[in-house]
Length: 156
Length: 304
Image 1 (tube, one colour):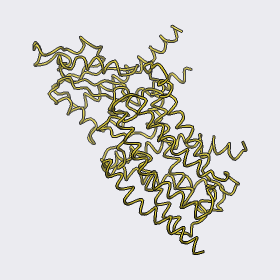
Image 2: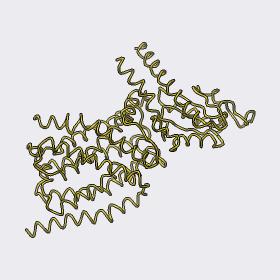
Image 3: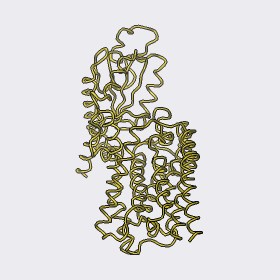
Image 4: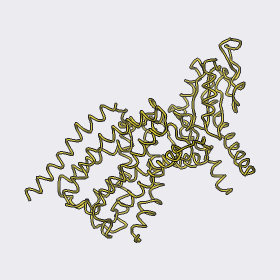
């Protein structure tokens, strides 16, 4: 059983599906996230890939200050990602609403609505910082998976 | 069940060989795209890690008959593909197969595609339904050529027994039919340029959009097995007869690997066809080849 758990934990850091959600971002962070997939950074060699459906993803990458329009979508998409999951907030907007703070159109910051595991600051953040943030989130996700399995075992 | 059939189903070219080989094929597909884009690409064990990770995901509970159906489709696909692999006459001199096993093989190779279509409709997702319709249309398009090619092979040998189908290598109709089958495989594997049914930029993952966790992992495994079953079919048709068993096994693996490489490079180098263009390709151009194969074979038989 221990071997299987360790294999599972290793797999969670070696195969990472990202779902990218824009909650009213200016596109700067989105462009930097897509840069990570380009030949220069090539995150696929680390087992990181973008998924089209939140059901297939492990880590939710959120950009933007969470506008009132997108708040419901954020909650829905977060609920659709299967456990164990982690959330990475890309850029300064989801962390603090950045220059949009105080606007009546903004429902952020993100951590008011869903739990965030890793904040990657910057306006926009550097692709290296984004990759490091995703790697940390993967580590958190693997540990969370172990904790959840232990919890289920106790309940049974 | 005799020992030869047991080995074919569980060892080679079945379960033990096909699952790792299928993962390697999926890796080769992704690696070829990466190399063509001057990237390094995924590590060799990536499909294995993806599968293990998906097994450990907690999926949302669905209720009713659709929950069971959605679990049944990928399992049925895997079982039918393992059956198809067991039917492939890799060692034909061992008295492999039975009369009419070619018809069973065609049915078993078609079942995953039917399950894929049904999965799209059962999932209730709009993207799933669009993907299912596209897959159904593409299946009708490529099966015209595929079935004509299989019938041509049967006519050349006067039997549907797979072990005999590879025996008419001097007949030009045989080679035209093999080319027809080779042309159909990208559509059956949903590879570029015939990847309309799972076009990720348009309809997310098509019929698999609502899938998650272990069931999605099983679909990915079925895709790997599809690679091995279809490239293996071509390998058994072009392999020379009468080779010793070890040479037959090595040739089977080498020809399958060469085809995997060929399809991966074609997939990486081409863009996606529209559905209309895909149908045009099969019904207008590839069908000419298939009709030529069957007409020439029938004429040669009549002449003889």
